[in-house]
Length: 101
Image (cartoon, rainbow, N blue to C red):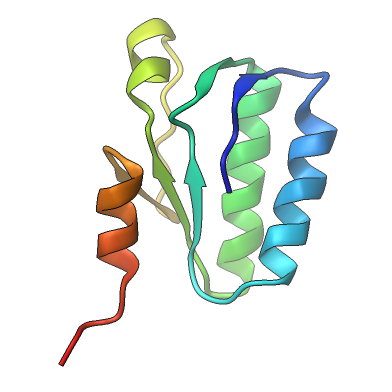
């Protein structure tokens, strides 16, 4: 799932609905690509934390990638035990791929 723009209070409901749709139609970890995200409010950050908590209840995890822009511009940085963070989407996808052989 890719998020672009600003994840503020006015976008939290759309994010949560979209995330719920993705989570219901997938198995395993959900990759959240934040490469095009310009920033987030406290409510936006809380929505991402809630998404991770929701997945954890089903023994799944949230994978975040592309956080560089957010970390460079905002003091809030997500750190949560039910998430894995990668620098970019290619690395995240590679880490989630089943082993070949």
